[in-house]
Image (tube, rainbow, N blue to C red; front, side, top):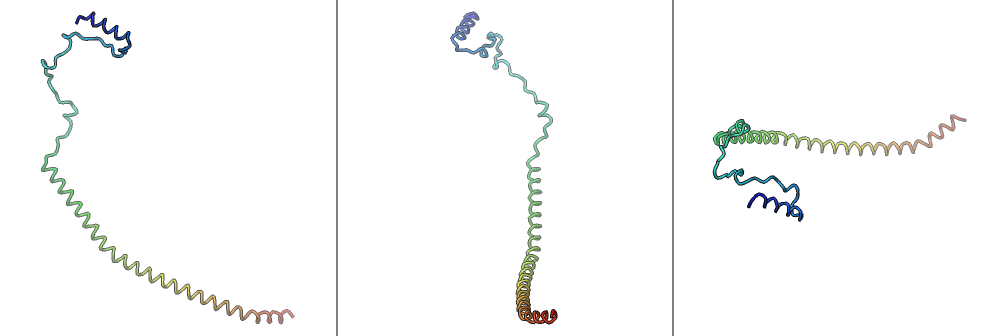
Length: 138
């Protein structure tokens, strides 16, 4: 297909509204289009790929994972030992709390008894106080 026919066809398609201006690009002749089968570009490492560290070998990864496992096991063992130490302390504190609550209840009961006795005593002494105050005022 000659260039003029192609250009004419593009103009006609553009007039029909089938093409947008952004779709029109400078066409290349077949001589200018590179054939990927004829030339193979030489691949080069990028600079960023050169600076990347090499993956650790599998044996190093296994060694690191074993170290992590030992560390986690030691941490878990320490937590277990600390828990076993704290459980008796917790039991002692619970028992002490129960004792204090019982003592508090007894003290409240005793306080209420003393108030009741005091109010009874005050009730009995009120007529005596009135009589004494009358004697003093007269």
